[in-house]
Image (spheres, one colour):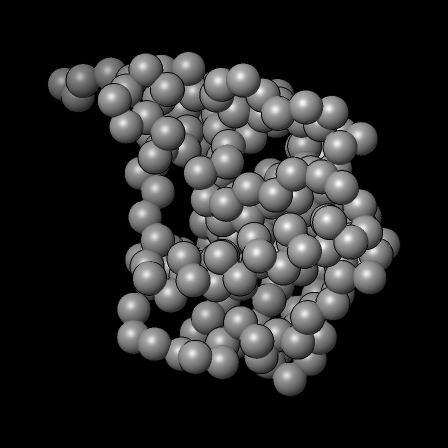
Length: 186
């Protein structure tokens, strides 16, 4: 006989001594692990998104520790994208503690060596379903960014092409090659 599986919630995760290091996906506790390279790529996005927000549309930019509880079909879940942007219109002030319960305009996921693309794809679909307007999944091995949009369309941009914030982040553009200029071993 197998022991019953515990169903975790984001509230349970926050009670752990290092609970802010975990996502809760479909009631399962998942430790967040990033490689050096994926963390570096996420940092590039945080830096560029902050600069864009200062110049174009004030808002909050978070790194991989910023969590969102925007999934009503699994109300106890929390996801922590590697980078995210949320406008002041959606989030008028910072939450005091815990996670944000308002969908950001953009989330970014960077595939680490131990990540499965199918898991990132599932996250992207969940973000869109929860009201995120634009999701970028960075795949370092193929030097590409997979794009999911709220209207259901998808595309891929490769090194040598330009990643655009489209109508979600007007004026945001960056050559995809910039993400992969200084390739290092993971």
